[in-house]
Length: 418
Image (cartoon, rainbow, N blue to C red; front, side):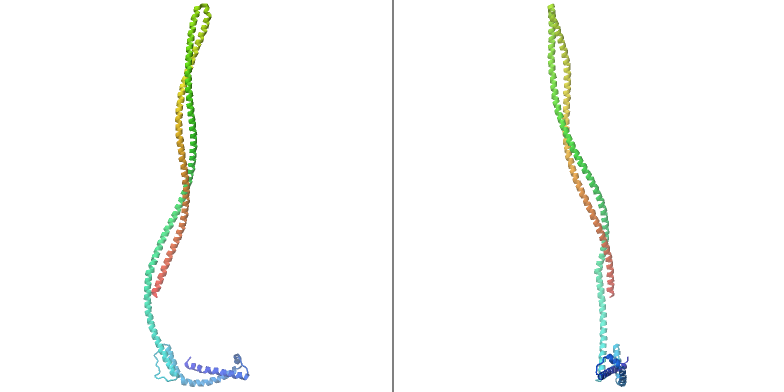
């Protein structure tokens, strides 16, 4: 829209508005009541159109005169303002300014042109300063990036290496944990088998101890029997010795009887001789003498038989005494051996009881070892799980450190490009 059209609009619009207000007031006064603007628009459209046409004709003439009078200076001022707004400050200003509205307008144009010139100069200075500041900022950012890379990059590199070492250590820990678990299982099985074996040995030791106690009791009983037998043998030896002495005494009595028989036989012989001398008178005496002689001979024969039997008895008694003495010696020797065996058996019983007690304690200790080995297995299982967690975390740490390295490189690239 040109400056003239703007000027017409500026001059006509207030006139039309004022005229419409005037018509509205006249119609309101004629009707004696106030009308709403809607009613005014509906009732007075024709009147308003006619009135506006008349006003426009009047104002058109006035505008033509005004354009001729002021339009040209305003157009020049408007062109100067447009060029100033477009940063074209090469247009000239009037040499002299009249003290009227146009002079004031040119003064405003001059101020606006000077402001635009100052703005352009300040903008150029600011751009130069900004360019210098941008370069310094880029240099500063580059230095910061280098410093950040030197500080953080080494840390990230160390973290990456540490995470790699941690992954290796975690894998080794995982391998060791698995090996420990397998060895713990084998150790637990061996400990359980050892516990069973020790329990068997403990039972056998207890049975052996009981057997030693029973053997000790039997040997003690046998020792008592042997001791009693030795006493009986000694008593029998005494009885046989007394029997031998009785046989010797009987032998002495038999000797006396033999002597008496011999004397009787001699007396009978003498009596027979004397009876023979007496003749018929001594015949009866001779018969008696013969009878006495026969008895004496029988007594002598019986005595001889008794001596033979007594000799046999004495020989048997001697042999019995010798045998009983040998038996007594053997029994006493056996008693000594039984005593030694009883002592050794008692000592072995004590040793077997000690062995049984030690084996029982070993069984208890083996049970504790088995429990501890099971505890080690459980701990190795926990260690296995922990090693798996550590390996997983170390792998995540390695991944995070790699991602962090990428983010840092991206940040450094952004800082260097800024």
